[in-house]
Length: 171
Length: 106
Image: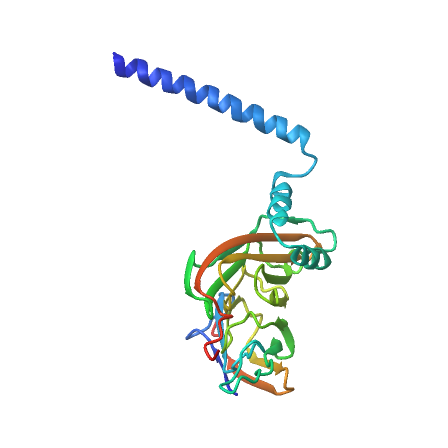
């Protein structure tokens, strides 16, 4: 009997919680002129340095990147910053009508933030590439993809680096 | 300087291929010093391109953020059999090429 009442109560709580979140989403949707993902991108970018934001703006022109479609796989913890495996893939068929033209990998703390800038032609299959990168300490990695319709998609990934690639052993 | 292009065994028409590229290159950042304290000049592969019989599959710039002995893995469905060719150029002006014949079985 008691258990039944308890389950009824939690059910009621769930309902109200759901009601609240739905209301919240409606409210946010009405207030924010930007799409939720674009707002997230703006928030993520606010944490970056002035120089990084300038580079980001000069790259993307409008500075508007939607944090979707691009996926990044990087270890949460990298022992050695000299060689960190990075895998990037972008959803989509990669046909001449809809494909990734360009993928830019940016580092927030490396002395030269541009890690790689690759141009692709339609591969007829999901765009996917892996490489190994150098990292100057724990930071976030931005991966930006320019599509054939000139829209930018992107993703941010955090990585903890134990030994920075910029420590010089000979000094 | 040498490079290797690794193809999966028995590539087939219309099937996704994972092509792996490995180039032997120190990718000097220009931030390191030798034993006497003199700066080692920057020397990285700044441009590379990969094509199938002259049709570019990808090309682009690498920076100092790429590890020594750059490794790249890339997925593609090739339209036809042919020679896959990799070309690169570094800051000292050295260029390199490597090519491999890719025969797709039906």
